[in-house]
Amino acid sequence: MLLSLLAGLFAPTVAEIDRLARARDVVGLTALLAPLPTGVRNPFPVLRTGGAYDVGKFGWKALGLGSEYVVVSTPLTSEDVGEVLLRRSGSKFVYIPEGESLGARIVRHSIDLRFVVPQKRAELTDRLTLETTGEGSFVLRMSPAYRVSAITDQGGKPVSFAQAGGVVLLRKGPKELTVRYAGTVDLPNYAGSISDTEATLVNDYWYPMIARKPAPYDITVRAPKAWTTVGQGERVSDDVGATERTTKFRMDLPVVYFSVSSGPYKTVSVGPYTAWSPRLSEARMQAQAETYAPIMEFYGKSFGPSPFAGFGALDSPQYGGGALEAYSYATYGGFWGVDAHEPAHTWWGGIINNTYLDSFWNESFAVFSDGLYHREGPIGDVAEKRLAFASEGGAEDDYNQVAVQYAGADKGPAASSMGYGKGAKVLGMLEQWLGTELVVKAMREWIATHPKGEPGDWPDFERIVTRLAPGKDVKGFFDDWLRRPGYAEFSASRSADGVELRWKGSRYRMPLEVLVESSAGRRFTAVWLDGKSDSFALPIAGAKLVSIDPWRKAVRKVAADEEPMSVAKAVEDLPKFVDPQHRDWMTEMSGHGVTRTLGDPAGKFIVGSPETLPAMKPLCE
Image (cartoon, rainbow, N blue to C red):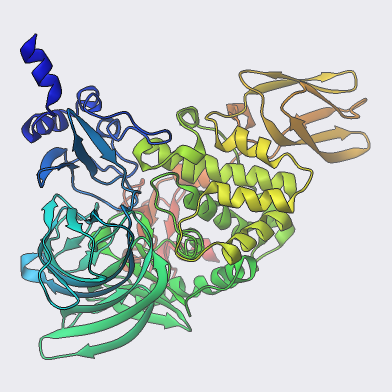
């Protein structure tokens, strides 16, 4: 009995916590926590599920931080969960969320970065300007790949600190700190990577942060003499020395996520729009740069001016697949052609920041903006594009796992599905209900009025929509679609004077479009489901056809027999052949049914030129 009581008075050792972390023992780790405040989520389930972008795949471990703290650590990639910080409190541990600033904030960075390519090493000095309130300790967070060697104050006096993983603990006091640190950078396709062909600090916390609050910065980058450096913001200078090339950038837009890359890039510019690549042809690079003018001009007119003079695209072999916004440019693992998603992040994630700790709202807005551009943009017939690029609302099973507004990175893969999927589709339904003009006006007003340098989230946008749409049940709509999991499930049948709905599960407040076809022709009618009634009146007497949600805009399960024929799907299933003289064309098709020999061209998707591929000549005549 005495031993049991004594055991309850003392918190477990770091070694015991480490054993639980390595085993991903969520139950055992949760038992160590002091009661969590209302609204604070348990940090440990993600050890089992993995983060939204696979944080945790390299395993977890526990490290002591001074005598009072423990860090549950793992290699990090950006826009995902961070390390877990715990403070001892008797026999329990108090969880300190990453969004907790502990009374400190970075006002501005001034960074000096040197790439030491042969050692795959980045050496950095960051002069931080701080604002602090109160006394006590605070923490800087960065990737655990970097080790701090020294911290000094504005007078050059050493400042005491402790580091475990990527968490650096120090006391408040100085308003300026100079932090010297370095790390081996070798996680291609996940975080930063340095090799003899490219140095890229993308998807990497290579800079100190506090509570993922945005900050502006200046940076000086020292890279191999023959390499070009691509950075955020405006380039201030670019000087070639005897052994290295020094490039300076000024990034005055406060952002959470920093990017910089150096490599043997070619550069092609079309006005203020630029493409960089070490491997693609200049013609392909020019074509990529040309795509951005109509996109950025459309967004500027729709949402407000960009804070940058132009925009760029970096083709990074080390980055792998996908793309990452950098607000004044984007990093791609191979160019995508017309991409309106990453440029949209200049507004959604750049001008209004997102930490990704609470939700992936900005991905929803970027996906919606991409669709908006393809429907309403300057190229092509708008009426036809509104049909061709209608926002489809088809639901996925994981929409039942978590509500959109609460789907932060700790919710694992479901967070991505809520951000890129359901959240964007909900914005599509909002547009269907309130109209394109009002939704775009709300987006523009949010950009214009949101406090600079403060992260935003769904409730900020909801407040603006509520004010612009008086008399509409905006709160009810957002309650149903953002603050609870799930999607609409119903069947429909004709009634004497309209349509009868049979709900499977909860009712939803939502717009629906109904197509009625009769001898008099076709008509489309917009109806509003108030979440209470199971029917709506509609003159359908004599109708030959009544189609509910014919464009599949509602967030609901779409039956297989509702799917129309798709040219894209048909092409996807065809064998593909790329002209050997133009291997840099359609590189994104690599591995998707690509054949090395043409043979009979019938039934194949062919990318080439009749000037270099004779078999194409009769096909082009």
